[in-house]
Image 1 (tube, one colour):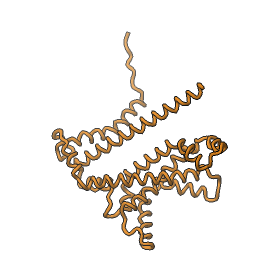
Image 2: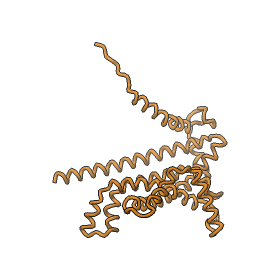
Image 3: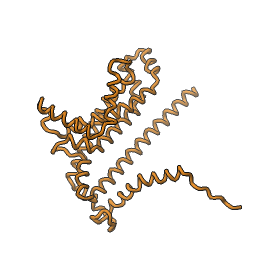
Image 4: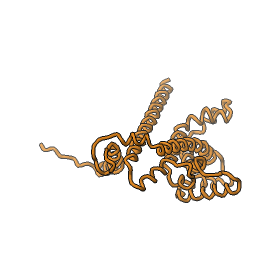
Length: 280
């Protein structure tokens, strides 16, 4: 009896090709971050010297800290503004200008970053001429710019969760005597918390990754990590950049795994509670 070898499905082959296309360059980058040669395309032996050189580079370390600080505060403010905008778009009834407001909130999603950066630059220049603020562009202007376009992404994520939320839960809480503000903090907010976390992580990633808008609104005193990396690779890729990219990949992978683990654990606890309620 002959065994018939089954050919892999077309979708499986395309999935493997797609994964290789996405992750094989990252794997090569990680391997060459341990290359002892200054030439990033020539393997000369295993070495960790470029990681040591990376941690001695004060320009890159300062840019990393600046990017993390701006991304943290921009994501936090974007969650606040985006949540308010999502509530206005989903919970408020029809009012004059609602369609225009929704369009303006979501406009940064489709607006080219060059246009957004240029418009914000002109805004800051005009404000400096009229009011004297900002006196010079730096981390503050980058934070405002990143908050502006990240709020749109948070608003879309939170609005999608609010549309799925059963309003009868909130109505039941208010019928039992809970004030609207207390209902929001103790009923609505815990339910939409996964959307808030997802929006914050998305905004943090977008701010950390942005190059175009930051290049327009930054000044000589503030350089983010993408700006430093871009200026470095224009003169040739340094092995330190490979080491930096490897550390970023490791950090993002670890953060993603931890987020997945805690969300999976919370979902398992919720399923146990629901099963106990059904059994009782």
